[in-house]
Amino acid sequence: MNKITVFQHRAASVLLALATLSGLNLAHAQGAAGSSAPDLRAKFEQLSSSLQNSAFRRPLVIDSRESSGQVRGDVYALVEHPFTKVQQALRDPARWCDVMILHPNTKQCQPPAPGQSVLKVAIGKKLEQPVEDAFPLNLTYSQVSATPEYFQVQLRAAEGPLGTSNYRFVVEAVSLGGGRSFIHLSYSYASSLAGHLATKAYLATAGRSKVGFSQTGTDERGQPIYIDGVRGAVERNAMRYYLAIDACLQSLDAPADQRFDRRLTRFLSSMEQYPRQLHEMDGSTFLDIKRRQHERQRQALVAQSA
Image (cartoon, rainbow, N blue to C red):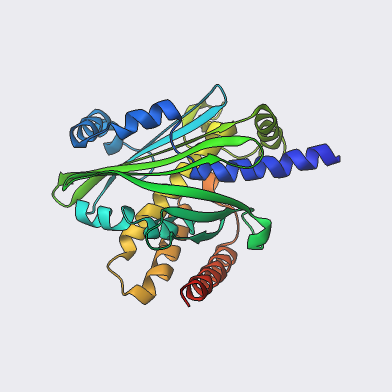
């Protein structure tokens, strides 16, 4: 493998990791900012049949698209949690680090200091890696809307490494009553020509066996054929973030000193339900890496507050 190919492989790996932190492209983000409780409830009714007959063993729908240098993913999920609990878990910017640190590519997440709004996230390889070798991505948190029945938050980064830009990570939720809520998670990023070529090179080599969740057909044995390429990567990360959110919601009722392990073990067991798409390493290795990252992050926060 020559030096150019090695560079493309490494660059593409980072780009695919960064895709997990993306939001909507500018036009779509403007549309999301105008969403409301009635809009999201209407979307729930539209997707009701798909949610009930979801192939994910849970009421969830994934959509993805790629066009003109933009890649975008949308996740719609029905959760059996009251809206107040969902707000508690997702509206506080500091709690977003609880979500993001679970992702295999996240090395560290530093929540905003009091009165500030920037999350400092380090993204790198799935295996253990020093934070200083990871790519820093500063995400600006904003609360777009908050009512007794609806909220929307956004995380944005104007620029990323290797020619990427216009990161958006947007989450909105609406109360459905009866202890249920409907969550919409969207993300996207823009890539330069060089970044696009690096990603394509990676997906044609080391990433060629990786697939997403959408079925594009069946093979000669009647087995499903799943979408691959950039859209496959977006769908994998969409599912990871949904499972991370689900893990955080499930952990809120635990004592504070037990929540991280509760989140972590649930997240791992949920990922292992989809080994074709989400299995990356031995479970004990993943748990060991994440516990060390969590402790390192805890120590950094203690030092910061000292």
